[in-house]
Length: 287
Image: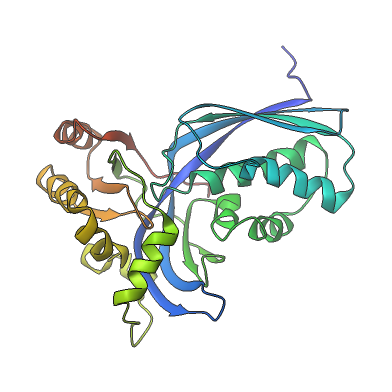
């Protein structure tokens, strides 16, 4: 059966941060960082249908999306319309599976998926580099999801260096998201109260062969522990459940454990009956 050339359904994957160190503060209030972004198989699903209406319409189902419109997906579509004089319209239907305010980059991933899919449907023929430039205008994390995989992130998150192949590819990852989200703005404000910038930049990429798990610290963990002690309990239980490493993703609230075996990760999920859990794995786009 021939596919409808006017419609495309794509996956928008989540990410985790394997280590996150704040390396500086900028005059505009942003912070520079050093982190490994690893794309994972947990995903939202975005269906895009183009038409001749000129309008962009967005609907969502699944997990609720807080905040007032427009959503980042809508912003991505309108950005392409404005930049390239697109007179066509689009209906954007999002199935939301990635928890909000959890440090998993779901909103940024949705925006990147919209840019990539509409580039195809509207026949813009934009290069990856051009899409990354457009993505940066939507948010610091959006450029990562254009290429995905494993990347070293620096600057405010927009300076990216792909790492192939990912040394994490054969591991399973258990995500544990408690029943609260964490505001990124709040987390940075709290971190500013105790932040001590490192004398030298960490070298996460140099810690990958072999993987030196003890070096992958996340500066936000100590901030969250004082306000949300349950995050520390989740980390402890992940390690008790057999994780070779456990850490916070982004500014939270998701904790993740990295496991040698899928079955071990699945068993460990039973430790967290009050939390939303996902057993997932790294996504490698190098093939």
